[in-house]
Length: 432
Image (cartoon, rainbow, N blue to C red):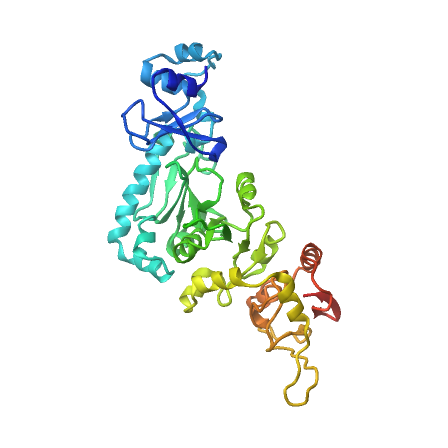
């Protein structure tokens, strides 16, 4: 007998609520009686109440509601009990366990209260463009702490550095939750302040930790659904930037915060995004450019600064930036316009605009700019930025590596760039 049948046998009606996570059912809670706060995922065999936070699998349900032992519950649903002192739900991702959800929600609610009175953290977030309503979704942990893993429903592990039991590290910093639409916390990340980051270098061979993740967190990116039926998507690297775009343009786009350029949307997310307009609003650097090779969509970096947060701090209008790309005409029309040569108003001659000098001062980099010195690249076919903001050479002014010409060639093939739009690197022609 499966979980859905057991719950309905007990007289509780479940109705289909959504198609996420393999299908989602909703109904009154068998434990607290709360109406429409109880969720069941038949494919996963899990349940969760957003009010009393009861949750688990079919075995847990029978143990808590019927008072059965572990072996009795196994026999009732026709499965072999495992040779363990407790149910094997610890083998599943930590975030699905009742203990993990309870501990994580308690931490999030406590840190949300802390953020309301800790002005330095609030001012930092406001400086990134977040308003009070958005800030209320985040938290701030004022003091680093270490907790027993058992309190989070996590199995015991040995710390390889100390030889003692591994504990859950909760560092000081901004708490960034990834809360699913069913009320479950999928992931909890903490952005360390600069001094904590420097201190972490002592035990990470000088690398440092900018973000710490609560053990047991799930791997999925942060998804902030759009409002008013928004169908387009904006994909960013930083979760804080995701909150900013959602705040300013959530009626225009759904927002996906990857957390890093190496992360990818889930298969389900890609299926939902298929056929939709996807703006890759990744960081304006070499890593952000390379990530466009692995992600579907149009590269649309900020026109100033490295990321949306810096763009806002420089006085940029986040909504206008997103809206400008969504309102652009069909790519082919912009493409055709981009190919038209520029006439010199004085002499009527074709003008070759080499653009401003490069930040690195390398004379070998020359770009045949079109339409008044603005740079056309990739599939956007529209003015993105001046030459020193072109993603293929942007890193040169910051001591980074030279452009990845192989990646550029892959982009040319992938997006069918016009060979007449080219740039020159060391005397060799490459599509630009």
